[in-house]
Length: 119
Image (cartoon, rainbow, N blue to C red; front, side):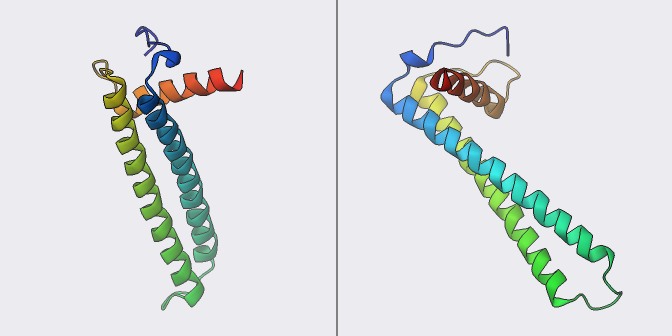
């Protein structure tokens, strides 16, 4: 990605800026969902290690349900991020460089944009 120049964020339309902000929010939701999935899996592993053979306890069943819910949330967050990213690229009139994923391309925009807003 470093060899491809990106236009400045200041040259984006208001619509494209709004889509970029939405993509940033979706990325944060995606990170939270990934953390929740990891936490649920770790808890399940910890309790399943000491479970007795046979019928699983109610607690283990609830933890499996929580893990499945966290996985669903993670998939939905990723899908929302990709939809917001596609809307941003379309609104900004950008072309994806060859062999670059939409996610990687928009993440560079988000990282660059947050660098400008925090400075």
